[in-house]
Image (cartoon, rainbow, N blue to C red):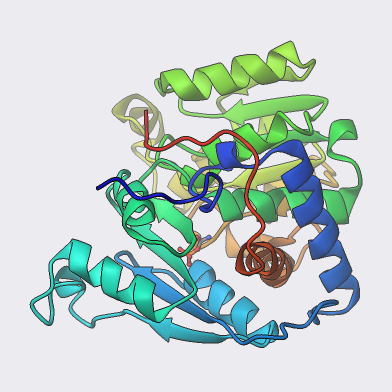
Length: 331
Ligand code: CP
């Protein structure tokens, strides 16, 4: 029997977020930020937020748990030390595991390497589900956090230039593109390996932004991004073509010559005021020499992430539905 769940129950894709939803999340996050992490509408009924993570996580898992606790709710964790056995440790099928946790909780935060699994969980679960990262596809709350950082650190997104440096595994990037159509930046530059192919849906999102007036361009060296207002950077797998141009030196010069690594030396040479965001964990793309520069805002980003996750939980635990598109699976 197909489930009869209300449309907009779940946050699986940034496509679920309409402009009014986005404005509401940004407004709530801003109020919570001004209250230094307190909620302006403390929960009058304690709810249970369940974490089901099939991939490792520090920020998303602990971020949602912290957000729930700050709102006065409680958390349960379906973590199994042997991650292969989550859901089957006690003999349950995946489906029975999800159905069981959905009966024990009021909301589920779910991460899985399989892009389709969060959609299955949402169909199985009568309680709302948040996609905490599905393979290389999406990470909608990370994108909300990135947008909130741009707004609170730099003002209206429409007046900003944004550079994104990542490869096609960066699940936050597609989610961010979907949100940016509600607040198109004046300029968007992708710093990518010359051989990288955008997926059709990423290309469509870029075309949509171009149609909205954003100046979209591609570059292949992080130094070409340093005149932007914001750099959102994540690690990139180098193709053999790029690798071959770096071979022959010692490790230090390899890191220095890697066009997708940001260092303090590069920032200072360009005399750049760029704000650097990174979803973390970093994997070499963000040299620790940057950490003491005023440009480095990625740990402040972690702090702001709790306010955004509080805003998302506040809405969803109050039964407020998402009114954007209702994508039911990865296409
Ligand atoms: N940014 C992010 O998703 O971090 P985690 O993998 O630690 O959750």
